[in-house]
Image (tube, rainbow, N blue to C red):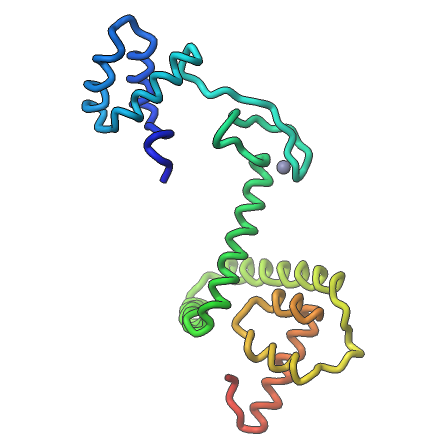
Length: 214
Ligand SMILES: [Zn+2]
């Protein structure tokens, strides 16, 4: 939450602006106004001073160039200034959210595995009851994501079909099998399809040997 010193809701600001720009004696008014608005005297006083200095209640804006994509965008001046354009901001936020989720999963592998099992069970239960077109759309979306992820990993992978899987890699696959296969592929420098094939092979081998998946 933003500190009360810097942030007051718009209706409070409107009342303060009226006081700051009006003719009434400001010093007496601030205490009463703070009490009426239910905020601190200091917050009101700072706002009054700011509005009087600026000659009005407004936010100074600047045209800035986005450091990520180079597009110009409008941002407020001073504290709270936006660092990049709205489009990049969403991308940055998504990236941070994904990184946050990934680090949570790494810190809580058991909780994550339990969550994964629950959500998987829910989907499996609901799947047969979904209308045909919803199922088709969901599968198409999944295939599209898989194709996209495969082509990403294909560009970055340093190991291909000819490279044998090491015991360490197999171990990594088993330990991270609840994580997004794309992330596992990227971590192992493999392609997404390579990871899928290896996982199903490990499943078969372990099933034949009577070994459960860990
Ligand atoms: Zn941008």
